[in-house]
Image 1 (cartoon, helix red, strand yellow):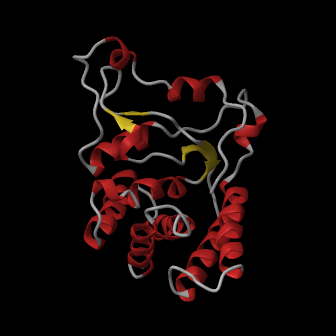
Image 2: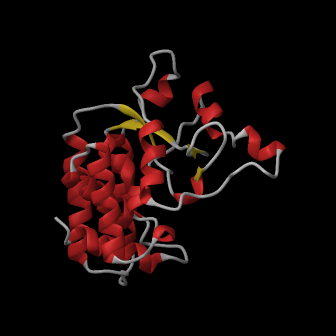
Length: 210
């Protein structure tokens, strides 16, 4: 998957801290988002154009390079074993999406590639605050995948595609590009770990939602 900033800038360090109120008071309201709209609020507030004063490693970690690493991982795994957790056609769709999208990006903004439900908290500082960011630079459509595939927000075809549709509508993001980015990224998670099946199922739903 995309590699996070190896030398976090001051902005990234500030974003990675939990709200002060959460550390100092038990009465502070700190919880995970209850809905996709909450995550969308955190998403819209966490993206900006990278500053020229930030470390070069952050601003040049483009999603094009990151997606090549995502492509190589499933390809190597698929070629080294006779058993695959899903059909080859699905793998081909994911690889094709990552290759084509990497080459056709038209914007560069600072993204958080780890914006799932457990990393969005309510706080006194902001209504919804994104924590523990994994920063990289690329197009906004790339950054929706963690929320779209997050089965903690509801695991089912209607829920996953509903998150995709809601995020794209609320944030003004091209649905087809977001769908294909989510397909490729979700598929990269479907090779190991204890939750392979949900990622495979989500990838299939995304593949037929075009």
